Image (cartoon, rainbow, N blue to C red):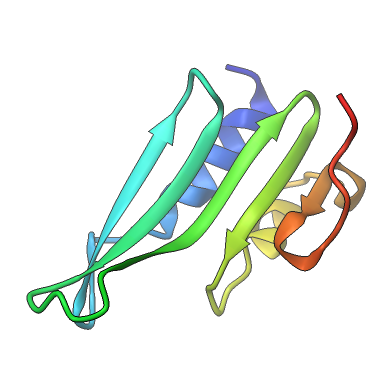
Length: 101
């Protein structure tokens, strides 16, 4: 695993914290084969609203594509603090275009 992927994986996993929030459980889903890293939230103990994606990022070549981020501490900021240049980060959820394969 290259350094870019390691950083993305580490930072996404942090959003799961202890695995619990107020009225939710948080699950990190870390797929090294596809280089997709996400944290999903499930209502707990009541299942009123179902589930939602807290943050989802994937690594494609030398780019990080952030598909979703509903946090108050954006993954973008965490990645920048870890030294990933802004030009290597694509905010797909904000409409930034993805690289053409």
